[in-house]
Length: 252
Image (cartoon, rainbow, N blue to C red; front, side, top):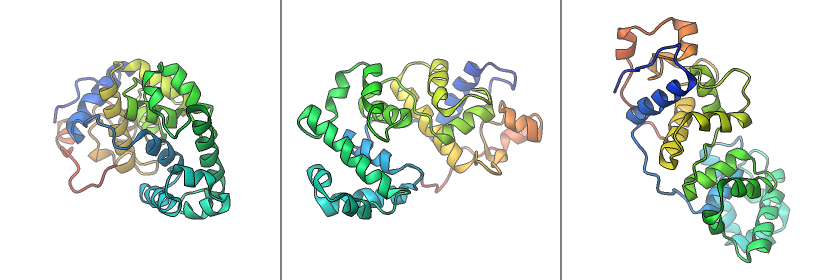
């Protein structure tokens, strides 16, 4: 894996680019082929709020197994839908939100589809999606990036935490604002932005924990402000001890 070519005093843009290069080598470059249909990406992301991937998948599968299709979900008694998605964090809140999202999509498009977003400008797509109940900038950006290769950057708590600790964004930059700040530091290339998002998401999940981050295993230690503050400058031995990849780690 390449060693960092920037230092702790590098600019945020330099750190963002080096982060991108190092994590490409650390995790491997991802194919930008959509992992899910647009409708599934949207509804699954709504279900995923403060919920584990396993429980999100369980809720989604139970929902479709119980009600058959999107029309069935829309017409279901809300209490029964909440029961079907009970493995999510707030099923009683998410159930009516999902039905309202489905209701609006069908009313505006005549069917349950988001394919029209492919032809819309980014800002129009973001505005339309975030006008839906329970859909914020992160969810809207995920759908536009993952399914329609729009040049946007989703920022969740993991990406936000890594970016702040490394020094790509300041300590007072909110998660919402970070969507715009980080995007300005990187090339407007959808495939690259997808890799940046997923790689930093995984780093936050498995190394850069909220509590007790595993800094010695991190490939970004050569220019991370948090590492410098807690361990001092990374020497040659510290950089060499970084594993080239996670083995046997289940990533999603």
